[in-house]
Length: 463
Ligand SMILES: *Cc1c(COP(=O)(O)O)cnc(C)c1O
Image (cartoon, rainbow, N blue to C red; front, side, top):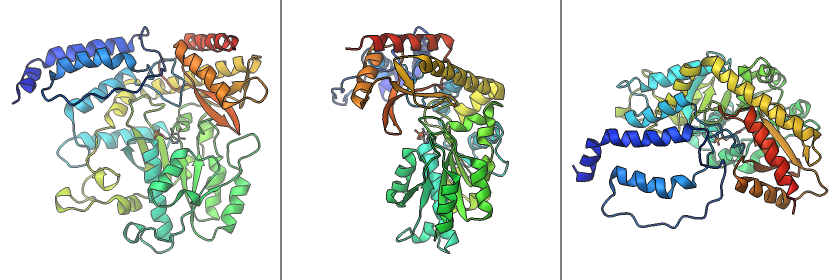
């Protein structure tokens, strides 16, 4: 064994203790990291011929890199929909690396069974029918990708073509949606469906939710079986398509219904919001992210479908030594990856640790705090609220004539450099805007008071 490896093995406890110090610092509210930051490009160095040893690298990392990170998993990062990592999820994630199981689905470890167990929990959390088959993928983009792949296979089945075998050449696959997430288009590109095959349906007035009557007109005139992507929680205003009404159309029209509920799916956890998810069980496939509102580290989302058979057709990986998909839960026959990180474990940890109640509390707290920001903006003379705060996202802009994206960015850069809170820009119905998305388990009232202070102060220093 190389002497550095040998030395690290002998000193593994000291190494673990040093990592522990970083963990403590990270979870302290006094974290010295700003929520967002601007960093210069890194000057790349050459690969060391002789290594530094793990301890040496850790010191190097602490000195040169750790101070340039952002506290994006902390309580005042309101960009994108980022979430964070609960203490239990963090422990689970560290164990994933420690045990390094390949959760591909053989019977030589309990790891894949834990994934099945976690999926079972999650179906209960989101009130999904028991007959959904579910797997973990790396994020909602991959979940949308897998879902559209199964939908595409279904379109082929309707036309008597096995796309997994024949390919999609000249196959008309149309995807219909009102406000699809960009990852739907990316998935269409990756799947060879082609981005131009999206059919955009108008949203209802002042909404991002689909006009179901217009959708029905589109279905009436369709000449081929199509894929409908319904949105359960749009990124700008957390608007929901009427899933019940769309589901009811299935009686008269033949289409694949995919629901992108990446973070909106968490509406199901709270009696105040669960009506938004009614009708979800009409979906043929569903996307829900774990690394957003479940507050597990990145690299975790769920994909659910009622057509496990079609999923197998798309993803089956035949090789004698890899086993029979019918006799074991062989995940690699159902997901894009063959070897797979044991990414269900952090979710299992957090669900076991905090239960339904704990996760409901996070969702409800984030929503009520978002509403507080929204209420303040509504009365403010410096900002304009662009949409009602439906759940955890506040979409607003500067109150001034002819607002430009440049103006928004100048303000957001100033807020970022101030270092107390962090927001990201967006465009809502053609208007350059700001989003505050709350999805972190640590965010509390005092963070909102601070965010409002920052919004006031930074707006005052206009010039
Ligand atoms: C975040 C998001 C995605 C993409 O998710 P990733 O986890 O970043 O891949 C897709 N759809 C919706 C609605 C989202 O909010």
